[in-house]
Image (cartoon, rainbow, N blue to C red; front, side, top):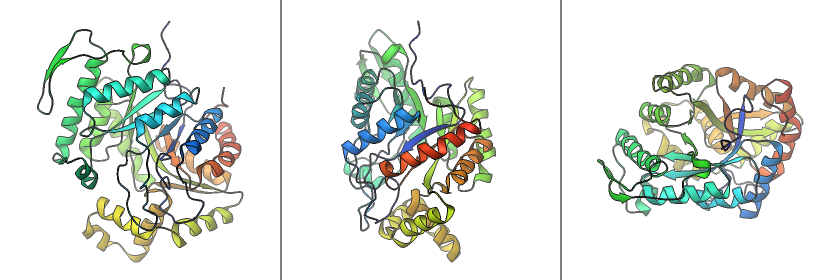
Length: 372
C-alpha cells in the first residue's frame, strides 16, 4: 500500500489555506500595537494545533535571518524554519508544515539530511519551500555574495537535483556542476514512504516563476491587483504542462475579520495605519521597490501601499465581516488560485473566529469540506 504523504496538500479541498509567517516576531504585520504576535514557541504550538483541528492545510514560515528595524525591529526574532517545523510536526496530526530554505546558505547534503529528519518526525507531512535568495543584508551575515539574478535559479536547480538524487539513488554518486562539485554523495534514510516532500517556490520574476513551474509542485504568485492574476496563473500552468506536470498556484496576504465591516475597517486603520511601524516599512520598501517607482507614486498610492505593508507585507487583503472575507477568498479561487496563505495580527486570538465564521461559509460555497 502506498504511503499517503502531504495528505492535506494533494487532493482534498478545492481551495486550500495556510497560516503564514508565525515563526517571526510580529508575523507579517509591521505594526506597533501591543497585541502583535510575540512569536513564542508555545504560541506556535497552540496555533499549529488550532489549525490542524480545523482542517487548515499548512503552516508556512518565512526564512528570515535579520529584522527590518523600526520601532519593533520587525521580524527581528525568528525561529529557523526546519527545526521549527520539527517541533510543530511532532505536536500535530495531519497538516503540512513547510520549511523555508535559502539555497546558498544550506549546503545540499546538509539540507537533505535535515529535511528527511523533519519528514520522518511528521510521517510525510514536511514541505520544502525553496528560496534562491534576494536580501544581501542577510547574506552578508554569512559572508556570502549572491549570484546574478537569473543565475540564482540555475544554482537552485543544481541544489535540487542533488537532493532528488540523494533521495532516490542507492549508490554513492559524484556531482560535477557549475555551482556544486561533490564526491561520493550518499544519504539515508530516504523521505518518509520513499517519496519526496511537496516542493514550493515563491519566485515572482520571470525566471523565478519558470523555475517553480518546472521543478516544484506549488508556486506562489503575488500580483499587486487581483485582475492581473489570471494570465499569470495560466502562464505558470502552461510552463508546467509543457514539462509534463501540474502545479498548484497560491497567493498570500492578510486577513482582518470582525463581526461587522465597520469594526474590521476600524481595526485595520488602528494597526496598519495609525500604529504601523514606518521605520520597518521604509526598509522593506527600499529593498523591494526601485526608488524611482516610489517617487512616481501619488500620495494616495504611496499611502495605500504603506498600509498594505503595515497589514501584511504588501500582500492581498481580506478585510471585513465574515461574509466579506469569505467573498474575498472566493474571488481568489475564481481567479484561478488553488490556495491562500494568510497572516493575522494576533494569530491565536483571531484564528478561532475565522475558523468559526469564515470556514463554514467557504464550505457552503463549495470551496472546502468540513474537517475529518
